[in-house]
Length: 352
Ligand code: KG4
Ligand code: ZN
Image (cartoon, rainbow, N blue to C red):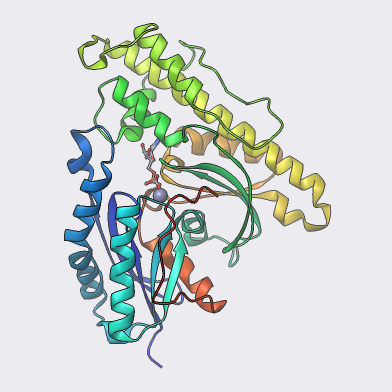
């Protein structure tokens, strides 16, 4: 029989991506067009620019992935697209493309939750158990910082999340204050690795709060005060020495990572006690999203896992930031026969 093939489409924010994925998980073709250079001058993703760039690129990106895989539309088993959460204009482009191709090629359509896909990237790690679920899941991205109980790949229970900025957003805002290139997370991490993380004692907001919520806006303000003092500042005219930049980045990164690690440990401990009958559920942490590429976070989570005795799977760095390969989760929806209809709408503002 011909292999079963999925076309996965991703356009939730500022990457246009497509992948062709076999049912056994093998990626036959993939293409990502990033928009970094388009948004750089604005210091953040501009929604209308993002939508127009998706519009230009979506079909060439899909075409490239299909050609790389050496398949044509008729060969596909299903077409999947992330329909939530994200920027409305960006989501619309991917969803319209997927619906149109599903109609033209008479293929079933599958709608994906982008956040669930970020965590599913852990299932794609070489050597991961055949079924990585159940687990506690941490998503740390530019738009989200949330904890879940993941009963299965597609059944997640929200535990808590940020009440203000996402962790990645805080990285990006600190980068902007230091006039580092966009997107800032990688740049801040690079400088942090050369700085002293004890120079500034930045707040670990809500670290002692027993719940699973996070807050990063106070930390962002503390960094601003450390750099420029109180009051409004034009950061572009501020002279900041390279040493100060390195130490601010290191101290900031330490504060973010401390909170993330501490909250994960607590969530896992709590669930271990609650679900003694289902030890797996409590004892495995899976982590995805752009900030999961951060080396310090990866190192400190591993140290916590070793010390507390839980299993840890962090998405491979190239699958942490937005991509279509994590859309392999669509096979789980395929198996559960959860298909979308041609009147599928987008759900931009979903927070959980
Ligand atoms: O998952 P993602 O590509 O997009 C969203 O769905 O939001 O995450 C992007 C975020 C950005 O805020 C970026 O600055 C951050 O991930 N990021 C990092 C690193 N690499 C990307 N933050 C810290 N350290 C990194 N190495
Ligand atoms: Zn994402």
